[in-house]
Length: 171
Image (cartoon, rainbow, N blue to C red; front, side, top):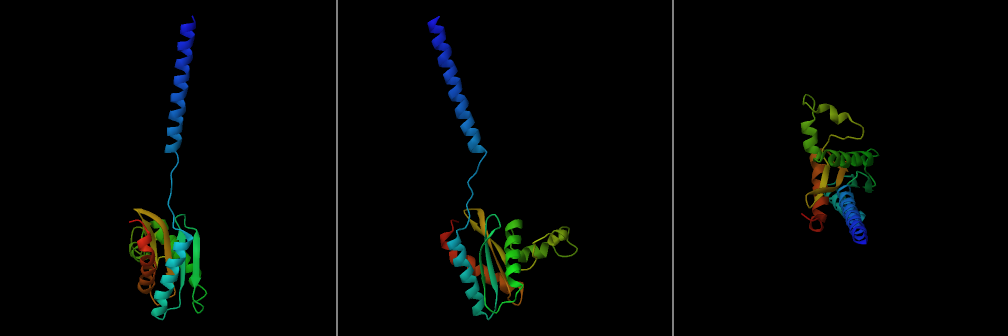
C-alpha cells in the first residue's frame, strides 16, 4: 500500500510540475518585449532635423515620438509658426500609425482614392514631413517636421534626423 501511495504522490508531483511548466510557457507567449527609441536618440534626431532645415533657411518645429505615438521631444525654432508644433506631432503620429512616410500617405489618401477618408481621422496629418523610425525590422518611433515651404523640404529634414541616429539603430 505504501508503494502505491508513493507512486501516486510521485505521479501527482510530476503532473503538478508539468502543469506549472506549461503555465509558465503559456504566460511567456501571452507577453512580448517591445523596443522603443530612447529620449536621448530622439533628441539627437530632432536636433539634426532642425539643423538641416535651418541650413535651408526654414523655421520649423520637429517632434519625435516613441513607438506608442507619445511625444518624446519637441523642438521649435524661435521663428517657426505657432501651428508647427502640433503639425509636426501630427505628422509623426500619422507616420507611426500607418507605418508609412507621410508623403506616400498623402498620395494614397488623396481625394478620389479608396482610402481618402482616413486622412480625416483625428490627429492625422496628410502632408510630407513625417517618417517612421525603424530598428531591426520594427518601428521604434517616428519623426515629424513642419514649417518648411513644402512637404518635400520637411521630409528631407526628417530624413536628416533619422540619418543622424542610423548607426545607433539596429538594422
